[in-house]
Length: 70
Figure 1 (cartoon, helix red, strand yellow):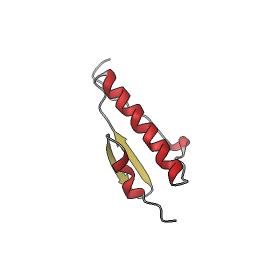
Figure 2 (cartoon, one colour):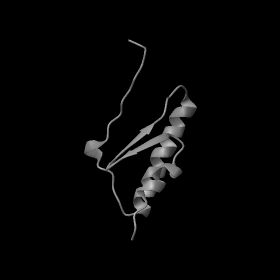
Figure 3 (cartoon, one colour):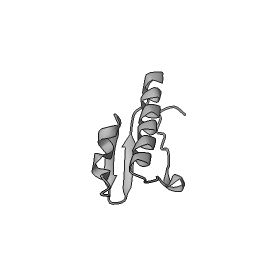
């Protein structure tokens, strides 16, 4: 089976960047609706990984929060 990593961004609404064997998904959260979009994208990724019989490495997954609030 040929794994179609390049179609990964087609399955989510967030911005996506693919680097060699790494992936970055970016979304600015300004509202509850944005949080729901992010959750929906994470669920789509879960379906994608199940469909392609792949798995993301949770030890390498990180969340980066950038804020102007102190």
